[in-house]
Image (cartoon, one colour):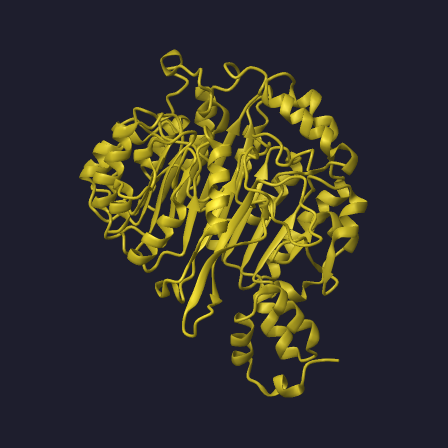
Length: 599
């Protein structure tokens, strides 16, 4: 039985407004229950605004993939996401997808990072092999790759066919995000580049490409992959090499850097550029004096400094732009530092002061700044115009001491307090008390002045002392726009931090009417897979074997109090969310397995 015909009398614009008020599950139900074409049109415009097509699957064989897929309109499938997907494994069986819904697509995500399947029986064994790979005990090509079955040629062709159809029919398409790697067969890679890498004047969408490269291939095949890429407005490259010996095989040669610079030169309308060499950044044995020539990536920096459309640059020690360049042409540059779009923890070189000097001399005024080596950026921040809206100060290599915490909360943050909307202050491993929020501390005083703050990442736990609820009570009073706090914990004292946090949040409640109508989400992201809060899963939910990180959260909830006119506020634990982030471009799982075998 369908919905009442009253909806048939409503104008399309009003139906669209109704659809916008519904969450995705409710919107799907609303559409299915209605027989009116106008209702379907209004719902489709939202349901299919973002479409993802994927090639390969990490954790299932083809039979299981078929059984878990839920069809929508016999064409689109939802793979546990909020948005419809076309699974390339499934699309191969569809022969040719019905194009009726493609005109609604505004954002297309193409994920070809994992062009293989891993059978259900081999998933655990592959994870064990990756653990051994991390320790340098084995080699990927001989010990891990055998668990991966390359997608068949027929299915590779299917994704190219689907991509060509969507690009041709999606008249409202605004953005294409392609997440790829050199694990993809070169021929298919070239065909896809031919479809989406057309000159700017011949296409109607922005192109955002992130590409993962293996440098342990002796034949340097990835040069051919780079040669096929052209005209992206947003480009991100992640480089990694063999894990067998962290001190060898990971340093890029001048020839490699020349290839990357050549790619940059072909993208003269580039808006954002990100460049990360994952392994070398985290090699504590790396000696920069030992590799003075191979670390000279000046050719990349010189190419970037010529791009007038450049808005954002992010990278780590291998970007090679600490050298002093003339950045006067890049007057649109507003974001500098470690990555903004793709997560990660990379950073500029310790001698990046030369780059900061160059930006200052060119009159570049940033609004977003992010670094992982704080102590080299202090002087630059103190002479920067007090207009930053986004600031991330992290300690990836450094061991934060007392003075750093005091400088950040007493000098840096107060300088930008009037404009800050997004603030992250965190450490990779450990915290000093001066770096954390605690009653009467410098962080408390500084944050009280940040009245435009919308989201915050901070540690409010020191060893077994948790001050998170005190922070919530204080900061909601002074920051009326704050909607999210990302909880950071010390890995050095992880178990104590987690226990103290869980107990404190579970016991907290308040009758303060200042919380009425406020929306606040407390989140904790377990990216390492080592330490997390006790899991909370929806009834009947089976967590995936592979995921990029676990998102755990509490939401401020209001309950009717015993006295009329008085409410009780608590922090209510939400169901955990397992995320495989389309924006992350790493090819391998870098950390330990994301699940407990004993669970």
